[in-house]
Length: 501
Ligand SMILES: [Fe+2]
Ligand SMILES: [Fe+2]
Image (cartoon, rainbow, N blue to C red; front, side):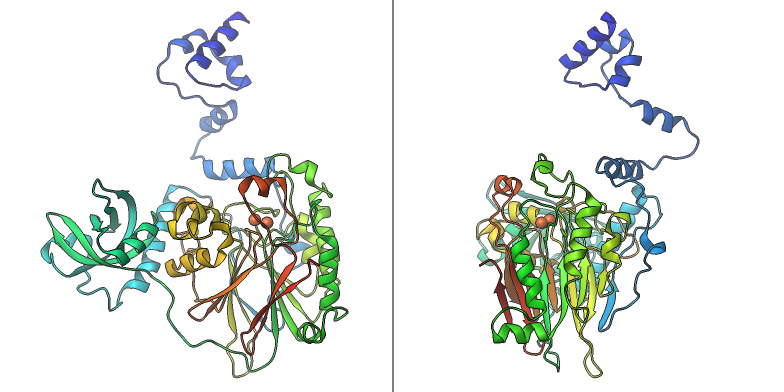
């Protein structure tokens, strides 16, 4: 017993906290060891088995188990997924495959991501004399490269120095603070994003004249031949004590044309689509002390309550739902559709289509009209850009969803900085690559309401249906609940109906 106490005390002195199973089996020689690799009993058992171990998968299952979501059966046996609902086509929606993830999948994922973004930049007129990093030395002036930003630092002279890489090598690039426009763009550059750079080379360093982003093209605003309406929602948070039931009931009664002024009733009459971009329920154990803030402490019952409320919406309206970080699926993106044992009641609604996060769907297609591409993304990566991108942080931060969404569209990626969200690599098709170009980019997560335009894309950050929680207060969020962005697809006019009164 004393040996064990001594072992623990000696290790604590070294700043090492150990688990009980380690204490049971440790011997006195451990105190004098300099290099320690501490493995749990479970890890040692796995290592002693023949064959390789998929640690990513193990961590994922452990995390799901801790959140009470292990072994979720697919709902395909309970309620088969509708292939299509009237007027809706799924462009991209991702299921979890049984493929085990290893390092090579991340390598393939990054390679795929680079080539997808590079293909958008290749052929851009701003990138004259495009060459690879390996060949840049042979044509030092007026040259362009496309690279993934591996590192970004500020030099002693307050210039910005990037290290970019392509499949042939790495190149240092200086963006001078004396070039105001260039420097403004350079300050916002994040690691892992793929950019084009033109400039000239001296002593192995490239001096940039311009930075080119993958971006979306400028095209004409698409308009439907028919007057139909699209409503955008997110962050319902059923199950939270702060869920705004009265306001949500007013929204339901509006969809049934039982409330609102004449104009609003007409909008409800012609409402065809509702997009819900995640955080359908509040979930369980999402943040510390959440349990005391729940009115429904059973995850399945949270979804049952949501399904009961959504079933009051007329069946002629198609509801498309993608998950968010509070929902009963894995955290890593792409998050699969909400089709599991917890969400059964939601999946059974006839007018509900469940898609992944992110997902792309086409709505409103007619005989001579191709329809609108809608990108749904909950917005988990947004927090990173609010904290780390100067032009967003210094111009309103969480109050400026439009700046965040612009930033991502310009980079054609929902998480250009790899650490901005949790990613499960999809080597064949980067799920976070923005393609096709959306007509509507619908997001949530930050519980603010905004509608803006970038080129021919309408950016909608949906409201929430939950008043401020202690968690949001700590994060400095300032929610704008119970507001509903509604868009006339014939005119592309947007309005916000306020149910919070
Ligand atoms: Fe939320
Ligand atoms: Fe969220």
